[in-house]
Length: 194
Image 1 (cartoon, rainbow, N blue to C red):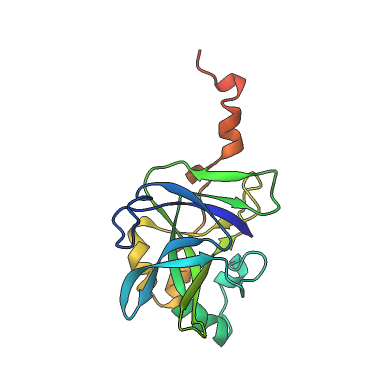
Image 2 (tube, rainbow, N blue to C red; image 1 turned 90 degrees about the vertical axis):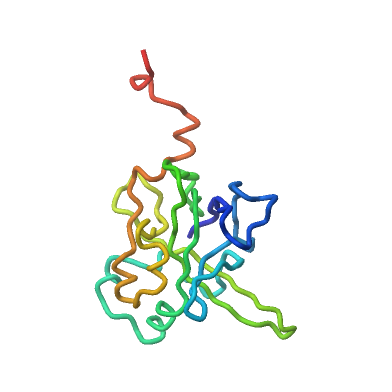
């Protein structure tokens, strides 16, 4: 399970807090983050709590699940509750060997997420979300990686039907993220400039 992620707050977002504009902050379970959702046929910004109470332990999307039809209830959630989460890095719970990872490229990356929304008894609107993850094929990477949306598909992805949206999810290429531990260690002796 993704324990935390880094979010670079995009200055162009209408909900932008001028104090945090352009800053990167770590978001842990129970903290608010900015997400993009499809609401009433339009894409909008929303603040939501990271960590859905109904999120399963372990990866939600697997290669086996990509190729089969989901039960009606799961398909309905997938069709109506997808969200985009701008990320700059992440950390996986229980994976001390790999530690934290940060994006090795400039520009925003968007991870796929699922959002749930409810109204409390007091009339307060509460939204929360989880990141979609998948077990990577490469053992050097953490045991779970967020699934990304291709740069050309970011907004369009929210409008797609469920089957096409599932096909457009991308594995995180190894070169997109770098281990913070590796950065702190610095280059290996044979990699040092002469």
